Image (tube, rainbow over all chains, first blue to last red; front, side, top):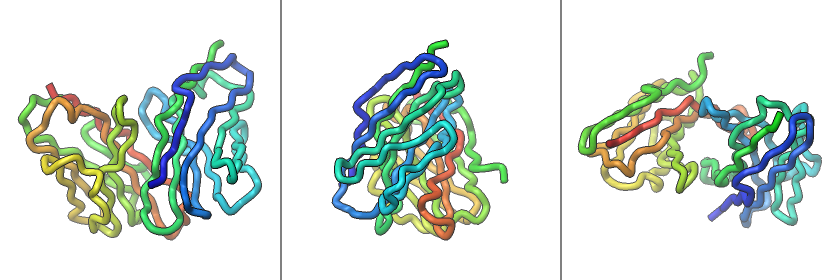
Length: 115
Length: 116
């Protein structure tokens, strides 16, 4: 079974600085999708960024980018120029391409932004 | 589109009572998922449907839990009888398979259930 591990329960960063959230996963599949979701205090789960495993280029979305290391099964999220609105729980998630359609989530990292 | 709509947003009930959570997926989406979020266990998939048919209910914790999807625009998750350990946030999510799986899911705002 696939597993997703986020080893940092909590992180904090100064406003305008850069922070990196870690995620590792375990799978025997060669093709799959990886996601980062943000959950602010409103509880809404918001898709931040996605990565297809068959693409070597790291995905970027404005201030958010990933460092995808397929061989190491690592998928970290970098947030540049942190803003107060970035404060939230961040979840890393994995989904197979074939077979079961479910998203498997990590335990989450709570990110605090210090003004 | 209004997104995935869940009701109620909050539910407080007494142990032993029946609880029904509701979800309206995004129109046209063919997959619907029910997740439960707790501090101890994180986000767990309970069950998911494809074209209104349950595909995998292996995450349903026990027989007290049941889920239905009578049509493409409505699903329910029922707990009977409810217990304090069922207290959690329950999320519904939907997606459209033909849009490509990299699109991820769209989640509702969740229902916070408290069983006292």
